[in-house]
Length: 64
Picture 1 (cartoon, rainbow, N blue to C red):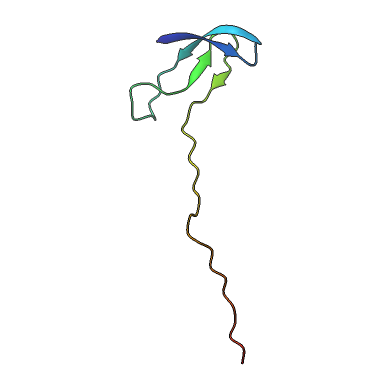
Picture 2 (cartoon, rainbow, N blue to C red):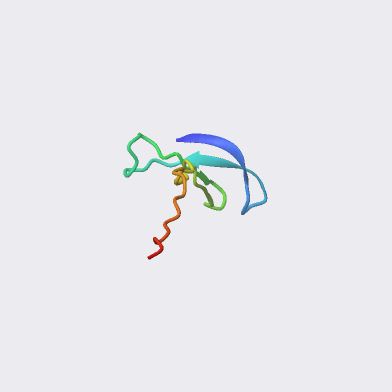
């Protein structure tokens, strides 16, 4: 497994993190990291913001 030293928020110190293998991810390993001391996880996922960029249209009733 791949190891990297990162700051763990749960431990409050720099700790070794490992990249666990996961079967539900299309790549060979997950993009997440787990602290080897306390098992806290850093979830790395792309942030996707869906915004409606169409201009707003105000609908008005016709005067009768």
